[in-house]
Length: 394
Image 1: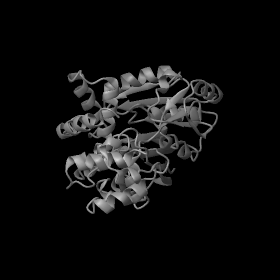
Image 2: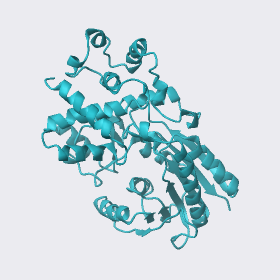
Image 3: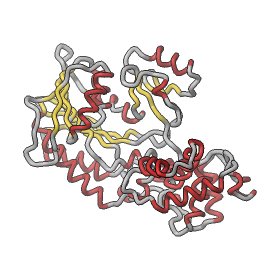
Image 4: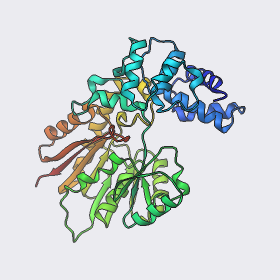
């Protein structure tokens, strides 16, 4: 690669100025906007170096920045891809697509490089997570996953194949694609497919545990709706339902309305509320199913935002658990008799997951835990989530 060394130096300069006050993607966009000398290829290669650097977290933090960049690029890239001018023959002879073999090589030259330091706060991670596998999975960029909406499998598969886009069929409702693919130019997003991580799609495994009256529409409240992916999943799974969505941000609900229109969902109620506060606004009536996909650390998704591996502070976990308990406390009163509460996070921290489930069970003994599970994604280039389904006892 002709400009490998220049890209390397530019990336070092960028990361030396990155303070985490905004997402790395936004920081890079701003930087390139202010520095017009970089062409599209330049931006792509420099951004790749920056993200590779973030993927090693705080591993080897005592080493010079230049050395950490060199290690990061080596670990993240399956092949040399034109970066060979940055390395000597010893490094190049050990280049492999296998992360474990590359880590072994790094340890021979950098005794202080500890891959367990890639992911922070490992003592807070649930015992149900393989910390070693989970930590090193951050060296690999996750895939993009599509959830095919009912009846769309054949048409979407044909469109993707016609466009000659590489993809894998995970199931009859799920495809995976490389992260770099511009899929919105090929298929109709929200109408035909939902861009939704594989583990998030697996929330349907908990839906399958819910007993419903087939003669009536389900009363659903998605109390932390965000982008609405799980609401649309519930609609596709259960069919006709009366839907209510809420969020703390009015802008989110505005965007959600547009998304629902693209998805063919015309009838729903929405309102803005802060469920972390005492006596918040709540919807009238009761609900057969309340989705509480609560704000969390997002630690199961840092493969997509690897800058968090270095920026996250352990003290934030307690802040999130306090918030989560408040939201749960303010929603449970809206459950109908024999109604279900589905609590979920995209976190791997026990305090946000099993300990909240225990809090619910102890504080509200009329709620029976139907099932709880981690939706493991780190072995499949996907996110990792947690979900717990409770049912109100008559």
